[in-house]
Length: 356
Image (cartoon, helix red, strand yellow):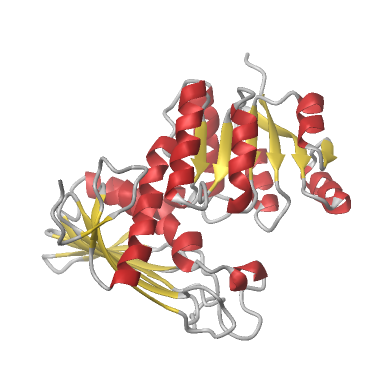
């Protein structure tokens, strides 16, 4: 029997306890050490709560003590680059929280570095692992909705209004790029998972809450290579029926045979062309947002052991970040922006200009 892989996690912020809880449910790996930035007391407290044996603020000392098989990075995006470079040059596989880097160029550079060293670098993109999205994928692939032609992802967390918005993550208010960079990246990755590549975007952004620096309202029209249109309609200032609901909002997938609706509690309904309205029952796993963090981290471990392919390797995730950048560019230009498949590390190209 193989021993569990030893993991070392960096980061003790808001999401760290969620991620650590997920690791306790993952088969074949365990977190043996936890590294924070400056606050030894905070690191120690989080480690004790999670049953992690080693805690400290020195990454090199942690690696020497734990002798990890992989590094799990759960820190703000600005810190990802240095941590990834440090790990990769030491041959240490990395699971890194999204977004991979602050820019498309840096993300591409990190992906290339890991590839050159033969070290796995995977983005911890758990959104696509939420069970209602996995079930949606199954229903689409089974032909239940026919050919999807119009999808609306309506995000309404209801946590971004007032002088002190985002109480769980107050630093959101100071981010110059907010909804697209921090949350929209989830939906863009999920769109790629469900419907294939995105080759053109048209995006509008606004800042509704004056206490917020970045955009808190986004409407992005995403054109997929399979011919479908996905509308990402995100508003973090609007009143929501349930604050930070299970599914963060609703989704409607309209196809040639049926419309699939996902409610904010993950409930799924199929509206057929013959008039039947069918509740679609499926298993809702335990854990944060239907166990999506567990599933994403399990996929990483299975990939390291050779039993599966990582769904979100850095080399592929660069494309997701490129779409995010294209949305910002579209909002700034006031027109559609086309995304070329061979420009993984480059700047998206405004639609309407001749593509050489």
